[in-house]
Length: 188
Image (cartoon, rainbow, N blue to C red; front, side, top):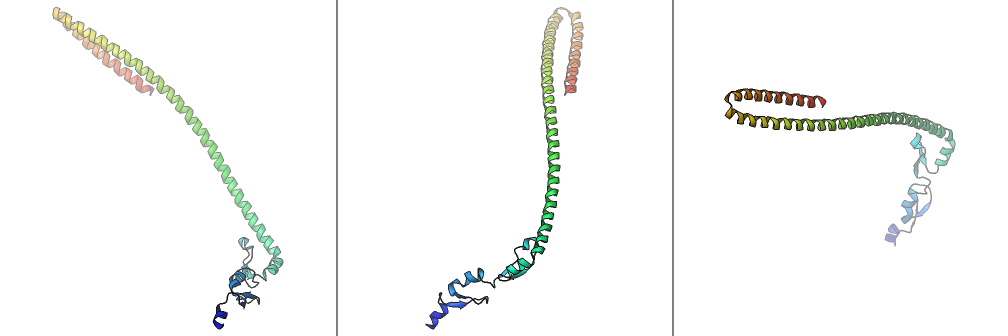
């Protein structure tokens, strides 16, 4: 029986914290962590600055005696929160203002990009027309070159004159091509 008495879960024991209550061994932890009046507690206003620690039994008295102190701590905390909210609101307003500015800037860039796209399209069309004219000039030069070759066989003197004219046309073609390239480059 003595051995059982030392381990019996239902044996009544005095509270380990000293509140005087008799508690079954198996419910001791539940009691000392819960309803025990000698359980140490911290003031529920600790998050706003009260550092008072006491037993569960002493807490109601502390709360009653320190009501004004707790209210002052709460007001200080509230003022601090209001100041932080004002700072955040001001920062948010600044962020919104910058965001609106960025949106306006993006809209401007989009309009500029659209205008540049139209300009590039126009330049590409103009380039295509100039290249077509250049091809026509090349075809004409080849035609003239063929005629010169045929005529030079039958007309020795005319050949020299025609070659000079052909050389002049080739120079003119090079000059025209350079002008065309310069016009296209300047419009970019």
